[in-house]
Image 1: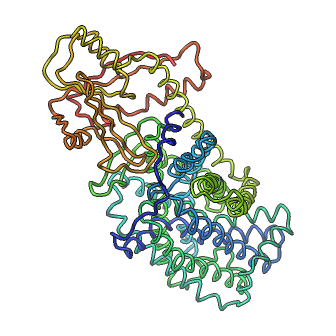
Image 2: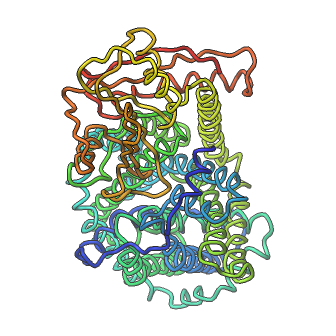
Image 3: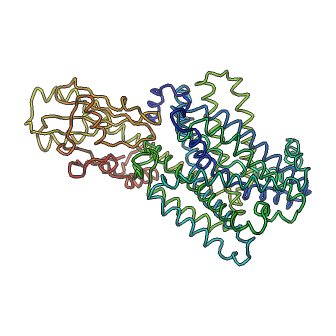
Length: 638
């Protein structure tokens, strides 16, 4: 926690829009259609159907149900997606990057009294995002494959097996990286949106009365006049905006303008045309409510559309899996999770990473969800809770950004954010009502993940304070060694330390047991800054004021992975030449055990110790050559 508070104090100016002038705007725009809008682009497969079916099953008139649901979908897209995310949140960037942790760092900079609240909100937002990352592949792929039932009833028994086969292939290829596949995401998703728009446009004329749904009063009347049923329908309507959170999370990949233009001039119109087409079709032919999306197309086009829908859902799933990788990397860098294996799958693109532990945990979660719920309709209740909670958290942190960072008056900030919060709160309440129908799943997953992250943060903070109390001041040690010099041996030694002003345990043990000091000794500290990426000229600081110890501080953003050999390549520009292949790297390996008297309860102590065993070896994580690493073990009770 102290690490995050300190980071917030040092945050630099962040209201800088992502620059796109040096890159091809059209390429970025097409790319954003595939990555940013892949998730929300699959919502028409099930959102309208689930909401209308719930309204009709509750006893509402069919026409009233269709107009009310379509009105709610339209205004949810306008207020939540267009107003909140496209027009407001995309401007709240942290050095060009978006996402939960970027927003947290930005908000904490100017809201120091609320640091703990924002910190807890960020952990909760991340926890709910992981729930979203499990449910999205399951509901998206299931809803697409279920279209095969319209081709032939013989496919009924094959829906779940085919969905699992697709998901097995999707998670299996993650280790190869997504750089090559991503080139096709944009064009294929653009074709998908064009097909959706065409299918809807053809059927709007089936019942021109569908245009009445543009008025918000139909949606308000449906919710206000039908009590619990109105809230149930509202919760299902929210499925139409799931994926909107990706707008902000993917800001750094494409920049604000391409994402905004893609939504306003292509994605939003295509979605509206499709939803209104489904509505007009159901008004004219009520029997098509069983699957209004696929009924938009003639029989000869069903199989191609099912295949295209499957591709679209794979793309949507890929986007959320990649987002989970990125979020986990940020969480590790910020100290919210133990070190995990991070493999870079592209030398050209820094964001192309693969985390095997997260990949297979997500896969196991997706299989569990499919086995538990069986159909996309049964999964719908679970989906909305995770996304609504994440959106509410984003709005809360956005309030601090507008008020403290943008210097809006508190009344102007409240006038914009509070109405949006009330709308999102209504959606959240509507979804919570379905807690026993599946809404319990994302709440349970979020609670478990929040507990894991909070335990790691608390345990790591306790461990750091304990080590800090026991470590020796480096300046004091230098004076002692000058007064009574040890035996000096040739070569260079690098000692990794959490604090550049303290003598690391591995250095003290080397002096105590080997009674020698190398000719050149470097104390290396790696710090995570509250910015996505650190500029190359700001990467390394070198302090040579002490004749015995050279201090090197390497700065990394929360979206970067430290690399010790590259740190010393950068040091050459600071006139510090280190030949990594001839250097000894000393690290402290701490064996943790339970303390009889601890600030943490016993269950939390045990959980922290378990998590620490899953942490990747520091030698591997920091890319230190294995044959040059010397690890010194110590025992610490927490």
